Image (cartoon, rainbow, N blue to C red):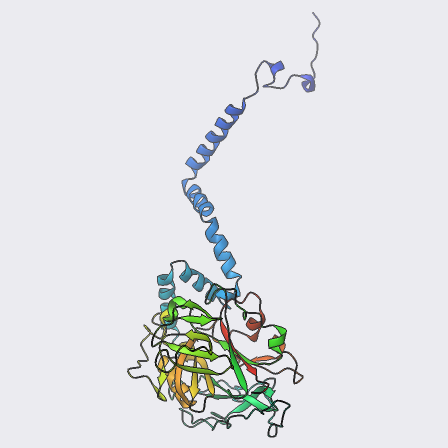
Length: 428
């Protein structure tokens, strides 16, 4: 009998009908897949658990990723992570981490300011002193307040130029409307400088810009970014207060109570004509038809030209809850002088008594703390290259060169926190 040689390529495939075996059904394939998965998960229980957790936390990763790319949560990644953690129930973790950081990074005692540190504002911000204002076409000319007197330094001997005022920013009606000075915050921490800005409210009008994150809600007629019409008169901008949950106060703007105003709360009040004042709600300031904005933050820090009674440098339950027991941090505050000027104070490694003392030394009769922490404290002036040119990031200068934030935030569409602006008046 002849043997026929069979080519392997022509031999029926194993498992085919021609081979004598039926292919697996869909149900059989599903069962086999489940068996394989059970085998893998059984052999790798730890990896399996981690995989389940990772999949389950997908919304968390999305939320965190969004926060880490959102400047509203902070300038630095660390600041953004901390804010996100607070917002998602991790306040105690943040408190612990901040306590650890500040306990191992206390402010330096003694010493001198770093070499090369200038007590004169950056040339880009400096405004040349002009002669007395000329008459305008408006019915009444703007009459500026008297130039502020030099400040007496806390530390001795004083540095050259310490406490001396320098005009900065856009001129208004031909004269400076903002002056800046620098001084050490006390006689102990002599290697740090605080910045002080004096604002002439006869030449400047105030406005509160609200945000979708602080205070939330909206939309608001004035919110970031500052629009071109307002940029053409902008002279200065600075941070507002705490998150509303921590501000222990309310928020009123655009004829709307966003958060109920608290009796006795420290209040920055702005009126229809752009005038601004600071006081305790229900005592120094009240609701009237002319009020357009009220931003509250804690209670008064300065009253009757003195720090409020019982002020304790180590008390963080009122003056820095968001930083728990951290005493020396970046802080900012705003005060009103006897003649109605506004004074803004900010600096690193300040305790609450330092901030109060600086406000009083700057002439404040009433004052309040604004926001604290590195990412949030910012004061900027603007000096466009032409008198009527628009303020912009490129012509903005921070009060202190070591401020983490920059003037760019006020022109960023994604910036969702509230802030204040001071703009040139055109007459009254």
